[in-house]
Length: 180
Image (cartoon, rainbow, N blue to C red; front, side, top):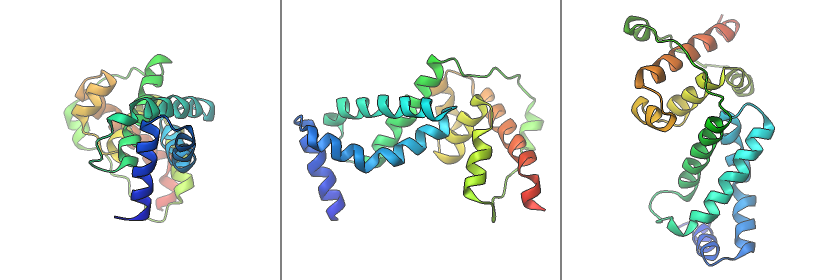
């Protein structure tokens, strides 16, 4: 067991017992990582800060339910992803899009990042419409299935696939110069 894991276990147990100093240590350790997750989903830094704050409130309220199976960071990431999605719903950021036929979906363009600057890629992803960006992040970056996405976002699986298709197409157009 690494010291970091042992430290996390001690902090989690202390938080479960109401130790405010342990809350602060967990916040300081994970705020940067969780903020970057929130920012991937939200339209602005202010919205990402709101998601970060609400996410940590949920983490601290639910920390006694953490079962020590899997990583604590992974457990927290799910809370922050779900919190970001809830805030998007509350602010009605979802973009309605029309369905496209399955033959178009099967021709979805693959994006190869190669030497692409990570900052540039993040900036271009942030420019996507909210619905496209949310599905792209959940499917490509966070590994959710279309079924899981449809359940979390209250959309159909075909809408999830359509949004991913359109997100990839927009990214391909915006990043075209990087691949020539």
